Image: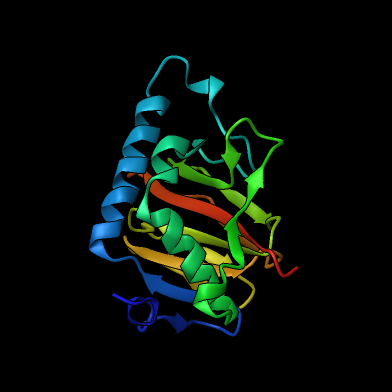
Length: 188
């Protein structure tokens, strides 16, 4: 499969927000990332690996670097960023943002939201940012300036990092799980 075939069904929801559906085969890798994160979350030492970030999510943790670096999702996110930017796919101008201020290095993490979690209005560092919906939004959409998006499993949104967004207080009762990421461009 060529990149142009993989991303043929991309849709711009607004001028700034691109939506795509992650193929089932690749979404299995997301499931593994969430399973590894959940295992750490359920440990009595969970707080040692917690990814402190904006908002009041129940728990945030970076994805397992060893698994991520060997995954197809790694390449998929880069290609999606290039597709969003209109760069020629072969140029490889997009990278997963590395954050050396955190021990975990990559800006790709799992958000576990339980009842009353919220993610207050914020923007990200980098060039492009995104959210991958692992579970249904359960009536807690991601809210942008001009859009409230109710994500479904396998949906991914990508948008300029400076675009402010939020998730209001989550009503529960099921766990809302999403992944967030940041990309940068070597053209900047």
